[in-house]
Image (cartoon, rainbow, N blue to C red):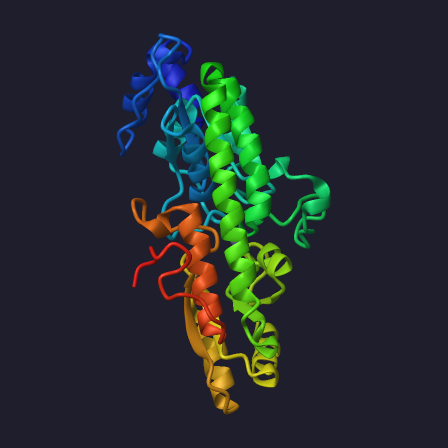
Length: 335
Ligand SMILES: [Zn+2]
C-alpha cells in the first residue's frame, strides 16, 4: 500500500505542515513524532539522519540550533534496514533528511525519493567527498565503498557538506554553524593523529585487521593496516567457507593474535575463524566488538562519532599487541 495516497484519501487534503500531526495519527505511528517546526521563521528546524554517524555530524555542526534525530539505532545494520510505516512517517515529516549515500542505506532508496518528491532536501553527506578520495565498491561498479566515516579526515570533509546544507536550512545560524564545524574538525584532526600514532605501535606482522564485513577499507588505508573481512562490503551476502579457510591460513601464517566482531553484524563467522585457527594450533582471541556501521548507545561516549572511532582504534591496537591507553584518547571509554 502506498502510504502517501492512503493519507491523502483519509484526510482529503494534500499533506502540508498543519497536517503533519494528522499524518502521524493516520499512520498509527508507534513512536511519537518529533515536535514540528511551526510557521514562525525562527522555529528550530527538524532534521532526521539515517545512521547515527550522520546524526552526530548534524548535532555537532548545528550545536542545538537544529533538532537532530537519528532513525537507525544502536546495533542495527543499515545495509539491511527497511523502514517501517512509522519510520516512513518520521522521514516524511522531517524538514530535511541527512544520509550517508553511496548505497549504504540500500533499501531506503524509494523512501528517500518520496522525501525528495515532497519537496524536502535529502542531503547525502558521504557523496560530497571528492571522487579521488573514494574507494571502489566491487558489488556496485557505479557506487563507491560507503564506509567513509572510518577515516576521520574524510568524515571531516563530509561535515563541511553537512554545514553547508544546514546553512541553507537555517541561514540565520550560518556563522554559528561555521564555528561549530571548525571546532568539530579540530577534534577530528586530533582523533586522526591519535589513531595514526597508536596503530603505528602494532608489531608489523600483526597489522592485519580481520572483521566480519568489509567496513574498514578506508580505515586500513589511512592507518596502514591490511584489512580482511569474511563478508563483502554489504552484509547482504552470506560468508562462504572458502573465505573463512583462506583467512584462517593468514591468521596462522602471520601469527595474528586477534580478530574482531562488529556490533551490527552477527559474530558466527568470526567465531568460526577463531575455532579454525585453534584447530591449527594458533590461539586467536576475539579482540572485541567494533562499531562499524552503527555507533554505541545514545548518551554514552561510544554513542558519539568521536567515541566510536576512539573505541575501535583503542581496542584494535591493544588486541593486536600495540600500545594505547585502556580508556582511549580522552579517558572516556567504558572500562
Ligand atoms: Zn557496512
